[in-house]
Image (tube, rainbow, N blue to C red; front, top):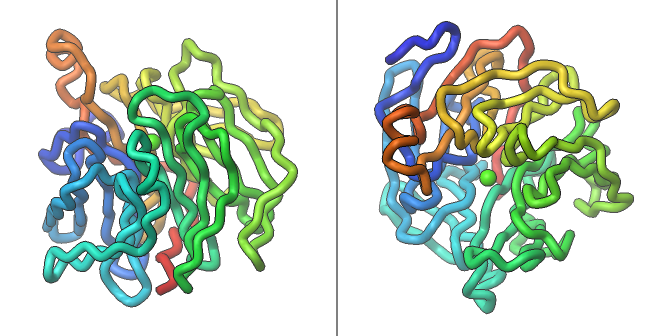
Length: 294
Ligand code: CA
């Protein structure tokens, strides 16, 4: 394990496109995906045990299930995944009819529903959507006209959904009805200057502040969604910072994923930790992630 001041490099994995860290408070384990590597990881920090699962499609997000195993957002739709038998089973074929699209970031709400969105893999603007997948198997379309569906986070009272379509350089907020899982009242709450990078994945801390990964920006920055102002930032020795999640037994460690996809040879020589998973201990805690409730 390398030490970069407070910042640690976790495991020897260097993902093509590391993404979607999620801390499982039930087992004190971290899961994250390598979208272009078509694989995801299951890491136990206390023992150092690392399991890798190959799924055969680009994997935008993975979340654990209450009954065991995982739900994964893949190119064609949502699948359940049983690591024991390395078995994928289709949950929903949403967007199978849009071959240019793939699923990207996803996260469960406090009721254990999965929200996950899509993006074009061929650069088509506003071709993506945001969906809600309920434990009973039903699928609901929440938003259309999304270019690169990315970070999701709920306010501490679950009455607001924060959402990033990276191409807009902004974070929007919706009123969220946790009873039925619907959104309304879209408004922009944070704008990220282009020179700081592109907003990608995000997490919320126990003070209601958002930690936003900046693709092309070498950083995760903490923002106040009530004022739109940046409060602080963590600099990383990798340009393509993709997402972050609070973890550790006390939920006071931020795990940060990065990518190396598309970097030139000289970039990779200059930033050899591109694609690594980082961890940094913080003075603020996060909130527990929620498994898919099925
Ligand atoms: Ca992302």
